[in-house]
Image (cartoon, rainbow, N blue to C red; front, side, top):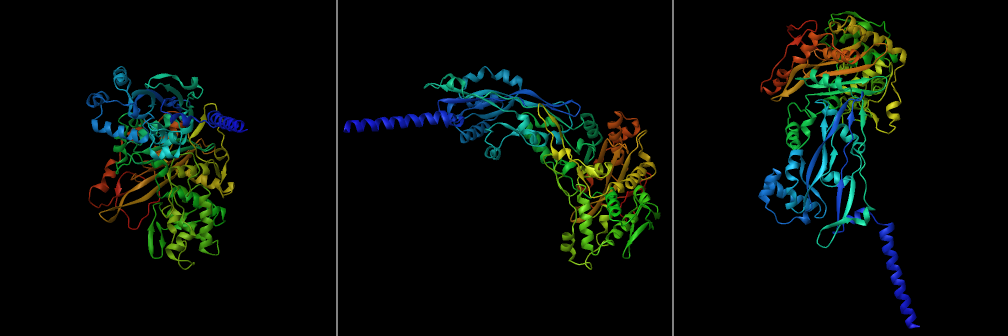
Length: 640
């Protein structure tokens, strides 16, 4: 009986062990467990990243072959460090630092020692690597750019850091990931899936074949190609026009919300952030605190909108019944806030809606703003309604686009003014906040928001969320966020008089000298006061030049916003650049060669140097009808 019991216990224990081992190997086994086995080596097979094309199928980003020197720390033997570093073209201290970092990461797993060897370096090193156990060369691919433009749109890739490794277990040290732009937003699509082979080693640490005959191996999956909405030729042309100028340009197709061009100036060649010099080049670009070439002004530059915002105030007043197109206000070459006269450049006289828009009359729109507030029982209620209308055009928000970053801008509220001035109608009013009437108040916008606002006007009351992705290889990407229209709070019938006023900006108003032959355009100029602090003194710089437009008027194909820092009045730089881009997109060629030559060759570098001269300065104000400086008027506010 005792013998039978002992035998039974032994059998039960044996079955339990066999069952547990079977379960661990068959049911609960994971590839991660293999990596813990010192007798098994993992070799990764990295696929090429997906290609990026523009909206017309033109190549923007491809791949070039490159090679990384990899290290498995536990397999490293004693070596001639000086000779090895000479071969790799790195100094000894850097070699030791990277080897220490690799050991900390994992003594058993491969880490990158030297990034991105060229084909020539690879050919020189390939045969010699056998002399250095623990090191080998891993084939990769580097980004190749078929354009010198679009750096802010495309973004760049770089090595994963500790934060990336903690956040996403897919990556291992030394791998690359999209860091900004399209490369970051669509990283999962572009990177594909890396392959992996598990190699069995014998007790002498020699490779003896694939582990379990390759059952656990994973085949690499090629990254998918994507098409973005950017027009390559328009983007390149726009960046040439922005040479020597700071600011942002965004153009949108109103009927879809697709971004046609997204330009930030100054910028840089995307190829600078590829290869072994990427780190050094990035440091130079990132730490340029004056021109800030890595700062994307097209989506992150927040400033007052200036006179283009007058169109929004007109629409709000029409919607709320505060005015009709025939409502008039008198301009006395300015308007009064208490006893203080504020200037206007429209020429004075009786102004109705159309005149107010195409002549950009400050006095008219301040009158409209006051009239709007009079429609409500309190200033707080008027501000609440005004804010709701403004936000319906996408202002004061990130817009919900698929861009990797950006800024929301700002729209003032009742809460803001209550905090500043105190609650109650006696504390603040339309007079207190009158700068909102002409786009110089607490409203701040980015160029993409201005372009989106213009697209909503072009569509007579709705817009599609601006987006950058057009299609992905073999995948349906229809996204309701990008295909469903967003409606403003303004009825469609109120847009036509405003659109006609904007069309008259070109026919007879502030942009009449920059008309495009055979193209009907609706637009609005803007001149925004520009201040900075120099030696603790608030100092006025040259005004910012702003322009928004869409064309053709009756069947809009493009809506554009151009914002040029220190660019003088709206029609001088922003207006001319916008007109050239519209003509380029709609016609495919430029007929006004003299204007093109002027915009391509003129820079504003002397303007940007002024704040760093160490001396406070004042500027002359320019009359938009000529290029001759005139003496600044007292207490004037730019309005064009």
